[in-house]
Image (tube, rainbow over the protein chains, first blue to last red):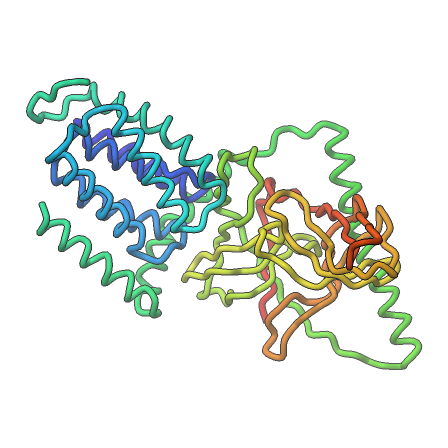
Length: 141
Length: 256
């Protein structure tokens, strides 16, 4: 269920990022999905989302996909040692990931947009937490 | 997990390398044809013009008339030069390719100033990197990225944008630079020249031998303030474009 909702949100986010805003909605949604589900299915979704996003924003094809895959892999590797299913982790990773993404792709107002991404990540994470995702019950923080 | 990620990363990297060549242009072009209508609809939804008040309508009309006046003054100068020299100079004909704006990614739509736009014309329609984009004889920017059916246009307000320009009244030369906001700066004007508030600014023309660059006599905007310090090397002027970049929906690409 969470994957269906995430894909719908991603499609909307891709068109928003390609048309009217440079806020990294796609990255934030993928990050929250990865943290909530901790599954491997997020990677093909990230790959496809990155390709579609590059087509709309005219970034080099594959660039966004590579970025998303690397960051999500790092996030999931991090969970082996630390608890990532928490708001502080979501916000810090959203901020740092957005900062890097916006800087790499040459956007303006990088710091401000990253701060706003933290707020968006908090909302998306809250939404995803309460959607059934058929995984092992996770302790909430 | 690692094998899956490795495979997907490898495919992404391969696509990235192949995209640097023109091998994928046809395939990406097909995808763009499918997504452009949706992209344009999304853009239109968030950039729909609110019913303009009488004051706004008058301001739009005034801006259009000012741009026409600046253009007319330049034409009068050209006519006078031709009369004086009996020269039948052949300025290259400009082919204008209409293009719709399908994207304008800003920090906060409608609040933050735009610096780049995406149009629905690309290499398959004859658009090349460096092509100049205009709106009713007003310069909008130039193409910085191209794909099969879409292009990214850097607006003249972008902080990396600069080109030579001159004032209409006294033909004072200078360099127009974007400042990353909504205004432009006419810089590198010597102190001995006279800049007047309210004067219009047009492009001076710096077209290279292969046709790249900004053509002459495209309207840039109007001088709103002049900064002249005797201790400085140059004087500067703030220039406001007649174009409302945040409301752009249709532009024209100058193609050869």
